[in-house]
Length: 58
Image (tube, rainbow, N blue to C red):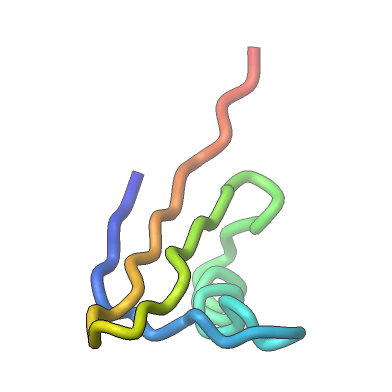
């Protein structure tokens, strides 16, 4: 599990988590093995938090 505060990946539409997907591709990791959760933006100025969790099988 990895937690990234203020990663700024909370772009809506097709670009959501695009930066993370690019980084995974560059290091040879499959996105199919991970779940990415990004908190919604707030009106209070608090940046979103991104959580990446490796899926487990078995």
